[in-house]
Image (tube, rainbow, N blue to C red; front, side, top):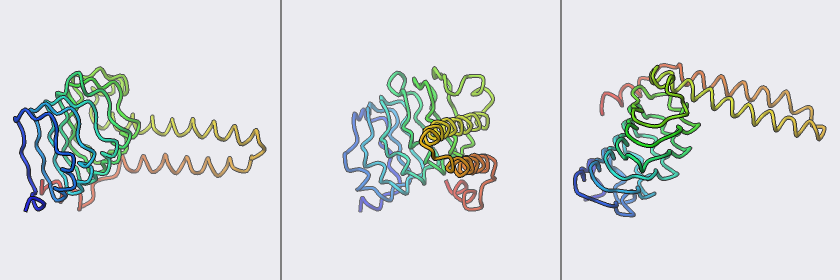
Length: 213
């Protein structure tokens, strides 16, 4: 039965689209190869492939990713390289790909990584070559994947801190001074958690998944 399929190679077929319901029909798929086609967008149903661990979509005409792409929490390897002038940004849910360890975004037109990028604490291999990146700056990119994750994590913390500052100021103006200590404590916990995610070693379960791929 097609629903039991675990690997699909549809590469080099001049495809311009994938079936709308592909994600609902292939829920057990673990490996999807659609490189070297002319696909402009991925159907939102692809986000239902909860078993997907490997996705190669390089050399297409992708203009973006489904907003719910972060639901693919089993994904370990993702190749989105060489979509050239079409791929310009990634959705904020990208940071929810918590098991992603190998990411290729080279040869695109991405100017900024999403603020959630720092949450990819399992990421160990990253290719950002040939992108007009401004965030993070190229001197950070040149230092490698760990530097990129650290930069993006700090950026996320700074954004939260600025939102915290504005909210606190508004509340103080309305006499809600007691909220300040609670919110400051909350922000510190967020910062500590992000640092822990970046620095913590992989669990045995994550190592096992990497060996099985």
